[in-house]
Image (cartoon, rainbow, N blue to C red):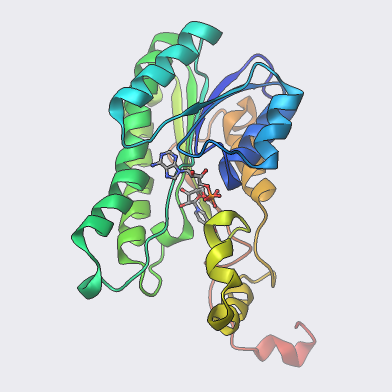
Length: 263
Ligand SMILES: NC(=O)c1ccc[n+]([C@@H]2O[C@H](COP(=O)([O-])OP(=O)(O)OC[C@H]3O[C@@H](n4cnc5c(N)ncnc54)[C@H](O)[C@@H]3O)[C@@H](O)[C@H]2O)c1
């Protein structure tokens, strides 16, 4: 029980990485308050509530400062603390910049970057009062390396990584740790629509192959990294980004290793 008596607030908890974090945290003893625009959660969230009926999912948008303020306040009043914050709510935006609508650029920045700031803004005073807390921001390998046609998304996730580093400096002496996780491509609804389209199949193979383990990641593989950062096992880990990408950002591969039977 690595998170016994801990209270976690997770944005984007209804789906994918956020819901996997919720279930893993509950399995380790935490109570989770989720915050999501999506009112129909995935099986992982349902499992979390089945295991720990005190969990609750609050419907709201991370762009709505007031909704986040109320949800965080409710968490503290009802459960007595906010020990862990996971910012997982996020969207993708694709398109080269010369054809990208200003509104689409703003949407991805507002949800991915400003939404992370807003959640932190309300949780930080509570953690300062407690003298403890762990903030985990789900960034992306796309915050470290650029990809084709993902300028807005790249910028939003690079912003999340630096926002995280800033918090580790400003609040480290208050007992609060802030870290990011940079996932590679993970099998969640986030990518499933794109991946299921017919014309995307050859590209899908190349993307999968760029993960040096020859497969995409699973939500639990990100949730396990988040669990480490949420728990006291990471008590001296602050201001870093844990890359969980199966080797996607490790370097290039041209097939030479095949001569040594390493395919
Ligand atoms: N899946 C991947 O390949 C991948 C890779 C790297 C990083 N990420 C990041 O991981 C995070 C989680 O992604 P996922 O794969 O679990 O996707 P997902 O679509 O399965 O889950 C994202 C959740 O965020 C919620 N959400 C979206 N906009 C919101 C808003 N405005 N307010 C509140 N909730 C909102 C959605 O309703 C959804 O439940 C995102 O920040 C994403 O950028 C995902």
